[in-house]
Each structure stands twice: as C-alpha cells, then as structure tokens.
Length: 169
Image 1 (cartoon, helix red, strand yellow):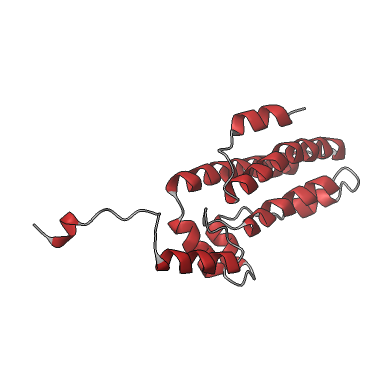
Image 2 (spheres, one colour):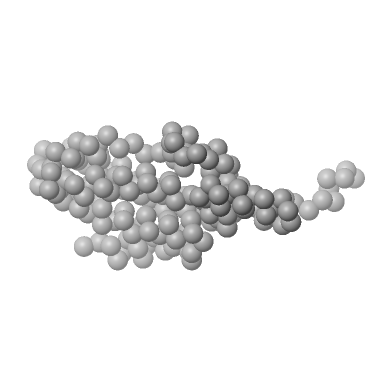
C-alpha cells in the first residue's frame, strides 16, 4: 500500500498558518477570502448593462453594446489591469466547487442573455426594437449581477429562476 493511500483527500478548506496567509493575500488583493472570488469580474457585466441603459436615450449606443464580448472569469482577469490577476485566477480555481458552480451558472446565464440580445439587435432595423431589447436585457441582467455579488461575498444561494421571474416586466 502506498503512503498516499492513507492520506486524506485534499479539499478546498485549509487550516493553519498557510490558510491564514492565503486568506490575507486574498483580502489584500480585494478577493473574498471565504469564496475565492473577486467582484472585479462583475465590472465586465456592469459595462454591458451601462451600454444597454444608454440605448433608450441614444439608440446609436446599441452599436457600442454590440462590441461587448463575453469573457470567462480567467479571460477577464488575464485581459485586465487588476494587480493580482494571477492570484484571482488561482483563487477561482481553488474555490469551493459548489460556490463556483452557483457563480458560473449565473454568469453563464448573463452571458447567454447578453449574447442573445446582441444577436437580436444585429437582426433588427428599428431603433424602437433595439431600445426594447436593451431595456429588457438590463432588467434581467442587473439582478443577476447583484446575485453574483452575493455569492462573491459569501451570501446565500441565489435562485436564478426566482430572480428572472421577479425581473420580467
């Protein structure tokens, strides 16, 4: 029997001085030490919402929204000027798989909404249709951004179906 067979499986939960040092590195880098996630990623979605919210007053801003490109968590940090971008990516990879799955589910939902709205905007000619698409997408995505913020900050599980039901209108 090898010596590794008797060792406990490694989990995302660490204790002792190494865990304390890791948590402090994350805290200093503005990454939540409990979840291993950084709110900086939400800027990617906030940018898209900001552009969508400009469309009703300036329909030509739809073209600006259409330049928005979906980015994964790692892609966002790789392309960002975030000081601790490598640490943010490592912390994400080491995060509790359940927390990360909740987070990824919501960010995937936001990406799907924004991508679908972009496709629809490209296919229509009327500014009034683009305005309606932009308004509806913003109504859907904003509460999802808030839900992601809750997950990042260690809040309760988000219920995407409830959020989506309450934000339609």
